Amino acid sequence: MLKKKLELFFLTIIVLFSGVLAINYYNSYSFKHNPLPQSYQTQINLKEQKILDNMQKHFGIRKKFPLIITDKIPGRLYGLTSYINNHITIYLNQKVMQESFSCILSDFIAHEYAHALLFYLHAYSAKNDCHSKKWQNTCQLLAGKDCKQYMNQKEIILSKIPFRIQ
Ligand SMILES: [Zn+2]
Image (cartoon, rainbow, N blue to C red; front, side, top):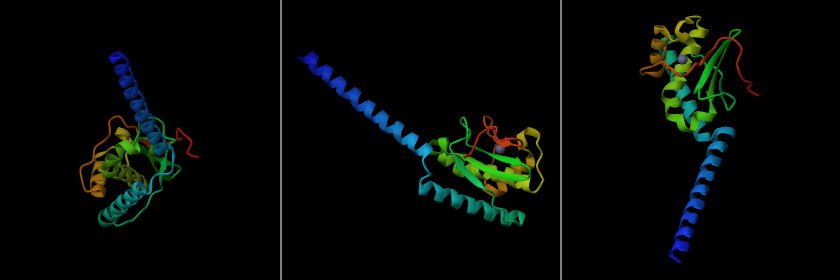
Protein backbone atom coordinates (compact mmCIF):
# COMPACT_ATOMS: atom_id res chain seq x y z
CA MET A 1 0.00 0.00 0.00
CA LEU A 2 2.80 2.38 0.99
CA LYS A 3 4.65 1.47 -2.20
CA LYS A 4 1.60 2.38 -4.31
CA LYS A 5 1.25 5.70 -2.47
CA LEU A 6 4.92 6.46 -3.06
CA GLU A 7 4.56 5.61 -6.73
CA LEU A 8 1.60 7.91 -7.03
CA PHE A 9 3.48 10.64 -5.18
CA PHE A 10 6.47 10.51 -7.54
CA LEU A 11 4.24 10.25 -10.57
CA THR A 12 2.43 13.42 -9.45
CA ILE A 13 5.77 15.22 -9.00
CA ILE A 14 6.91 14.17 -12.47
CA VAL A 15 3.66 15.31 -14.06
CA LEU A 16 3.84 18.66 -12.26
CA PHE A 17 7.45 19.28 -13.28
CA SER A 18 6.73 18.34 -16.87
CA GLY A 19 3.90 20.85 -16.80
CA VAL A 20 6.16 23.60 -15.47
CA LEU A 21 8.80 22.77 -18.10
CA ALA A 22 6.20 22.85 -20.87
CA ILE A 23 4.90 26.24 -19.72
CA ASN A 24 8.45 27.64 -19.52
CA TYR A 25 9.24 26.30 -22.96
CA TYR A 26 6.06 27.78 -24.38
CA ASN A 27 6.70 31.20 -22.77
CA SER A 28 10.27 31.29 -24.03
CA TYR A 29 9.26 30.22 -27.54
CA SER A 30 6.42 32.69 -27.63
CA PHE A 31 8.70 35.56 -26.51
CA LYS A 32 11.26 34.74 -29.19
CA HIS A 33 8.84 34.63 -32.07
CA ASN A 34 6.07 37.13 -31.30
CA PRO A 35 6.23 40.93 -31.54
CA LEU A 36 8.31 42.35 -28.71
CA PRO A 37 6.25 43.22 -25.59
CA GLN A 38 5.59 46.94 -25.31
CA SER A 39 7.53 47.29 -22.04
CA TYR A 40 10.71 46.06 -23.77
CA GLN A 41 10.16 48.33 -26.75
CA THR A 42 9.61 51.33 -24.47
CA GLN A 43 12.86 50.71 -22.60
CA ILE A 44 14.78 50.33 -25.86
CA ASN A 45 13.30 53.60 -27.16
CA LEU A 46 14.26 55.41 -23.95
CA LYS A 47 17.79 54.06 -24.19
CA GLU A 48 18.05 55.16 -27.80
CA GLN A 49 16.92 58.69 -26.86
CA LYS A 50 19.61 58.81 -24.19
CA ILE A 51 22.26 57.72 -26.69
CA LEU A 52 21.03 60.36 -29.16
CA ASP A 53 21.21 63.02 -26.43
CA ASN A 54 24.82 62.02 -25.73
CA MET A 55 25.59 62.04 -29.46
CA GLN A 56 24.20 65.55 -29.72
CA LYS A 57 26.21 66.67 -26.72
CA HIS A 58 29.56 65.16 -27.74
CA PHE A 59 29.42 65.04 -31.55
CA GLY A 60 27.00 67.84 -32.39
CA ILE A 61 24.73 65.56 -34.47
CA ARG A 62 21.62 63.55 -33.78
CA LYS A 63 21.62 60.64 -36.21
CA LYS A 64 19.07 57.91 -35.59
CA PHE A 65 19.94 54.60 -37.23
CA PRO A 66 17.42 51.91 -38.21
CA LEU A 67 17.21 49.51 -35.27
CA ILE A 68 15.57 46.22 -36.18
CA ILE A 69 14.56 43.58 -33.65
CA THR A 70 14.46 40.19 -35.32
CA ASP A 71 14.36 36.47 -34.54
CA LYS A 72 16.29 35.66 -37.74
CA ILE A 73 19.81 36.19 -36.39
CA PRO A 74 21.45 32.79 -36.04
CA GLY A 75 23.26 31.66 -32.88
CA ARG A 76 23.79 33.46 -29.63
CA LEU A 77 24.70 36.92 -30.96
CA TYR A 78 23.08 39.80 -29.06
CA GLY A 79 22.79 41.51 -32.40
CA LEU A 80 24.94 43.18 -35.02
CA THR A 81 25.57 46.26 -37.09
CA SER A 82 25.78 46.10 -40.85
CA TYR A 83 27.42 48.65 -43.11
CA ILE A 84 26.68 47.73 -46.70
CA ASN A 85 26.64 50.11 -49.69
CA ASN A 86 26.61 53.07 -47.29
CA HIS A 87 23.51 51.73 -45.50
CA ILE A 88 23.91 51.32 -41.78
CA THR A 89 21.51 49.09 -39.81
CA ILE A 90 21.55 47.85 -36.25
CA TYR A 91 19.90 44.48 -35.54
CA LEU A 92 19.02 43.10 -32.12
CA ASN A 93 18.48 39.39 -31.58
CA GLN A 94 15.03 38.76 -30.17
CA LYS A 95 15.89 35.13 -29.41
CA VAL A 96 18.34 36.08 -26.64
CA MET A 97 16.59 39.26 -25.56
CA GLN A 98 14.51 37.87 -22.71
CA GLU A 99 17.48 36.29 -20.93
CA SER A 100 20.03 39.01 -21.77
CA PHE A 101 17.86 42.11 -21.76
CA SER A 102 19.63 43.98 -18.96
CA CYS A 103 22.98 43.57 -20.71
CA ILE A 104 21.57 44.47 -24.13
CA LEU A 105 19.92 47.55 -22.66
CA SER A 106 22.77 48.77 -20.47
CA ASP A 107 25.70 48.05 -22.83
CA PHE A 108 24.97 46.52 -26.16
CA ILE A 109 22.79 49.16 -27.85
CA ALA A 110 25.36 51.91 -27.20
CA HIS A 111 28.10 49.51 -28.31
CA GLU A 112 26.38 49.05 -31.68
CA TYR A 113 25.46 52.73 -31.95
CA ALA A 114 29.17 53.58 -31.60
CA HIS A 115 29.96 51.28 -34.56
CA ALA A 116 27.11 52.82 -36.55
CA LEU A 117 28.21 56.39 -35.81
CA LEU A 118 31.83 55.71 -36.85
CA PHE A 119 30.60 54.14 -40.09
CA TYR A 120 28.41 57.17 -40.67
CA LEU A 121 31.32 59.56 -40.02
CA HIS A 122 33.67 57.38 -42.12
CA ALA A 123 35.89 57.29 -39.06
CA TYR A 124 36.14 53.54 -38.51
CA SER A 125 39.02 51.16 -38.86
CA ALA A 126 38.24 47.57 -39.82
CA LYS A 127 41.13 46.33 -37.69
CA ASN A 128 40.24 44.28 -34.62
CA ASP A 129 36.67 43.79 -35.93
CA CYS A 130 36.15 47.56 -35.80
CA HIS A 131 36.89 47.75 -32.06
CA SER A 132 39.51 50.49 -32.19
CA LYS A 133 40.45 52.88 -29.43
CA LYS A 134 38.34 55.46 -31.24
CA TRP A 135 35.38 53.10 -31.19
CA GLN A 136 35.83 52.60 -27.45
CA ASN A 137 35.96 56.35 -26.80
CA THR A 138 32.88 56.86 -28.96
CA CYS A 139 31.03 54.10 -27.14
CA GLN A 140 31.92 55.57 -23.76
CA LEU A 141 30.69 59.01 -24.82
CA LEU A 142 27.40 57.55 -26.13
CA ALA A 143 26.83 55.20 -23.23
CA GLY A 144 28.31 57.32 -20.50
CA LYS A 145 30.16 54.29 -19.15
CA ASP A 146 32.87 51.74 -19.91
CA CYS A 147 32.68 49.81 -23.17
CA LYS A 148 34.21 46.50 -24.00
CA GLN A 149 34.51 44.21 -26.99
CA TYR A 150 32.49 41.01 -26.68
CA MET A 151 35.03 38.34 -27.46
CA ASN A 152 32.48 35.72 -28.53
CA GLN A 153 30.42 38.12 -30.66
CA LYS A 154 31.28 38.77 -34.29
CA GLU A 155 28.81 41.58 -34.64
CA ILE A 156 30.06 43.68 -37.53
CA ILE A 157 28.90 42.90 -41.07
CA LEU A 158 30.61 44.75 -43.91
CA SER A 159 29.40 42.58 -46.77
CA LYS A 160 26.35 40.39 -47.36
CA ILE A 161 24.08 39.75 -44.36
CA PRO A 162 24.15 36.01 -43.58
CA PHE A 163 20.42 35.72 -42.89
CA ARG A 164 17.10 36.91 -44.26
CA ILE A 165 15.11 39.45 -42.33
CA GLN A 166 11.67 39.06 -43.91
ZN1 LIG B 1 31.36 45.59 -31.50
